[in-house]
Amino acid sequence: MKRILVCLDASPRAGLVLETAADLGRRLGAKLCLLRAVSLPAHIDQEAVTRGASPVEDLETAAKSELDAIAAKLPGEVEGVHVRLGVPWDAICHEATVLDCDLVVLGSHGYKGLDKILGTTAGKVVNNCDRSVLVVRAKI
Image (cartoon, rainbow, N blue to C red; front, side, top):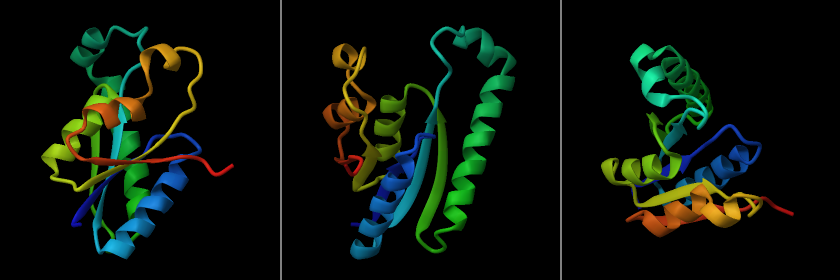
């Protein structure tokens, strides 16, 4: 295994996802590619915002800064830091292919509310990604 895509959001479980992926990478001699998919809330007209680009650039800049700080704590283990604008599950599947990752590691959400009907990001990645996927659950 050469490359692991580590999908990190701003949730409290991101630390566990990173810890799991880093441990797996060390054991397998694989490099980590850190990814944050950013998207605008559904109530914002995304086409209008992208024309002005300021809120989008702010989201991307903040995400990149956070991932750079994480990568700095893992010297020699991180191959790249990537931020993509889009629907998270689609951005994850796309980046896994583009970066030629052997494995995708991401966190799980519990099924609540609309997730029961629409499905979670993790579920959509598992069902649509052309790579193997490891879903990290919070320790109970």
